[in-house]
Image (cartoon, rainbow, N blue to C red; front, side, top):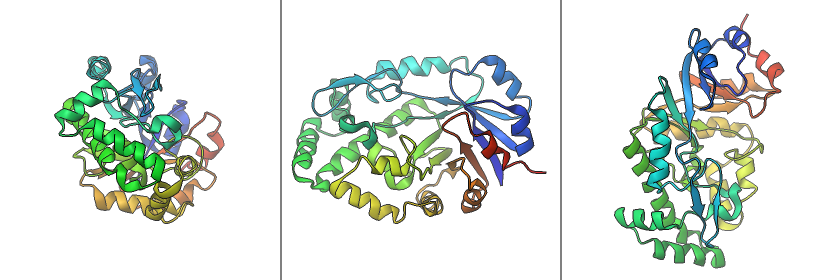
Amino acid sequence: MRLGVFAIDFDPDLFVRIGFESIVFPFNTSREILKTAEREFEVFIEFKPFEGGVIENIFGEKSKLGALGCPSDEKTRDKNLSKLENIPYDVILDFIRFPSPSNGRYFYSCFCKNCSRKAKELGYDLGVIKDKVKEYLETDNVDLLEEWFDFKRDLIKDYLEYSGLKRAFFFTPSLSFLVGQSYEFELTCIHPMIYPEPIGPACIEYELAYMKGELKSRVMESLGVVDDEVIRTELEKALDLSKSRIEPIITISENIEERIKMVERVEKIYIFAYSKDKRALFEKLIRD
């Protein structure tokens, strides 16, 4: 199995000893580091397509959520895409999605003028969708969210076709529909973020903590398990659902060797750490 890493902290000597072939760097990584890295590794750049945009929730509240701007905002789309003009590396889309349950009230987004216009282009009536989502909030009838989920999926698909970008980090299959992602999208490579622990957004237990009622029940039913075994089961779902190449990304952990065995069916995986204090865990992977 081939290994890659999402590098918050670049440690070339350690990465060579581990045997990493590829490194994904944050977008604003210095050119000096990137040039150094490309001597030993395949280099990818993380790209956040909606960063800096404004999003409007169902309650009429507007906010900037960092990387989670409105996917319909063409000015934000084009402004961010223009940043790629002089990037000599392949990019991997990150935050190619709508807000998730962990965004609280902003999970129920986006209902701005740009989304209303885009909905019409895609064959939806955002006003009708908005009424159904409001009714769901009063009744917990999750079936009322179906058209909203469909609209979000079609809008993310629209961006992918517009941008022509073909690699992306996705929520794990049982959660992906919540944020407008689909494993049926035609991409070169999908990287399922299969993170069991409750560390932050996209992590399964973390997102579940912000869900309730029938929606949570349906997600739990799809997951089946929420311990480390979910790494194996969600990978199997991704492989079954997608025609794209699947290269999962898993979090570094005390039992990282066991986690790697759970995904050994694929040719390549990536490892990610949420913070810079994980060197000892990475050292577990050194191949003598």
